[in-house]
Length: 272
Ligand code: ARG
Image (cartoon, rainbow, N blue to C red):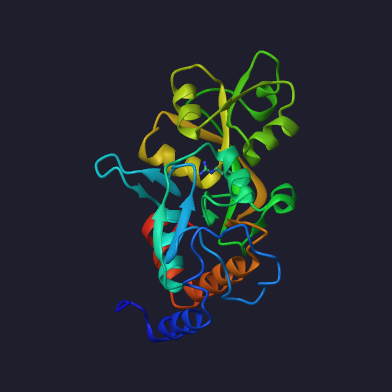
């Protein structure tokens, strides 16, 4: 534990003294709801913050092709969170975005889902969401030079690609109702499909479409930025309110001590 700051060490010590660290293995989901005090929580694996995501959402999360390791804004946030909580981070393999909330709700597999996940009422009915840590909006992306607009896309002959289970998919259903929606498992498939002419447009979180166009899809362009005013939060089981409190405390510390600003600078430069 030599890397812990003094404050973290003190926190770690008091958790250990309370017997919470020793007893936390594989007990996630067993919380009775009375562990509401910050710092009292269960973990799927002792000493580890076990994380799940859909790892096809750069720059928030993706797989580094040469190392085979997850990387991105959320990965760095998860590492910093774990550090602030005196834990090690443990990343599980990628899963479909629309399975993340059910997995957290069912318990036993992962402690948190961190996935550029918008805080919504529907999700909050299933799981707890942490305090917001990123602001986001939606965007419509088409082939560069295309004459499409949100109006021309609203036609039965048009195909709009979305990632299944996302707020972008919901926005497209509500606002481009006439077009055919193609629900794909990743936003990468959606963008590649627009590039190859399979689909007419993608609706996707603006920071992701900006980053993707800059890094990999220079032949696509954003025709509309949609100010949905979304905020990302981290999903945690409702059976583990102490973990939500501890994550919120760690997020607040990360803002205060500059860790969050450093992660923002790393992945977004001055843009965020
Ligand atoms: N912010 C959007 C939502 O919550 C999209 C998130 C997609 N995240 C991902 N890792 N694929 O619905």
